[in-house]
Image (tube, rainbow, N blue to C red; front, side, top):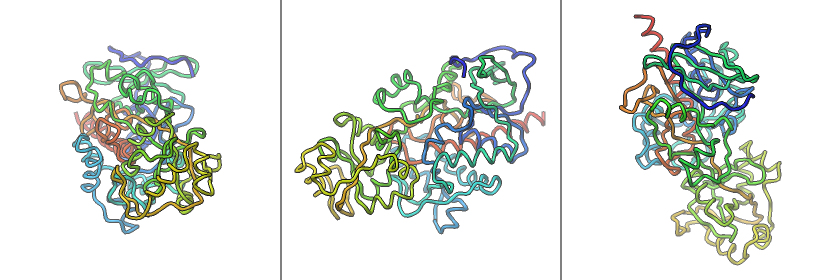
Length: 468
């Protein structure tokens, strides 16, 4: 790709030779492809522009689990759930600070969106059962058969190909063109450095957040300034730059998804289900330091605050066997992330801590015990022990352009631009303004539900234009 070009907003008429499309979508991750597939289902034309050679983004790096309530897949597995219960769980995790209009909109839109992707585009979803991620009161994590984000992206790409959705790759959008208070098109840079232009009736920003932009992270998330970034390089903050240039309203810029279980050497997420099912984290001194059941996002800050910014996930053989259902864990184990100790002395030697301190920690993990941090234990850990050395990582941001329930970008006075939409990582999410507000799966919830809503809004705008 050519040298990086700063995002900009251009005013005035676009180049006369720029082709015209009804809807232009910036970004071909889960959000952009969902939006495009929903438009295809409404027989509406669009073009998706993707900066990389192949669509992947943060979705491909994630677990690929999408939370949804009231889906066909849930009903097929006998799971009773509702959008209202899901919305309550989102707000409970965010301590009531998530944008109420988006919580309601996304909680209601996500189930029809997954059903449409399944029924209309052939994606297969199953609901993960047998455990609950922190904050969820029902099994509602939907996964494709591969149980990976890469598998989800592969299926979305195949569906887009089958629907004949035009996806232009190696097209880094750098320009938003505005005229008379509306979006009129965009400019994108090709690998040879040339800029091409595209006119549109509706513009959807489905690009990602700013986690890959170190300057913005230092400015907006100072506690994560030196953290490992586990997301995609495309998280360059373009939406923030365009928003500032437009004087658009930005919201929840302090919200993000961290992860407290990033295998330090291998660069792979270790499933937090190990913690919720009985595993613990200890620091370099062999001591627990937080309630691991509160969530993996806020755990990132807790881990980074430990000596050396590292911790050890400690679990036993039943949990090792449980974790085999997660492909990412299997990959991490194959890469040498999981180490085994026959007894406490060997585990202490592995960690480099005092065996007596570690023994005292493990003695506190027993059925019915309640730790000082409030964690209640249902089981003890028995030798042999298994451990993974981890650090805290920044995965993706949850703040961005402020939007209404129809995904329209808002001006400072709260009024929407008529045809400029944003969803997914480009927009504010439903995690509030802090790391602890992130409920497991909020990122893909915003991406898929936001993609579906933006498509519905775009279709309505096109219909209104045709009727005038």
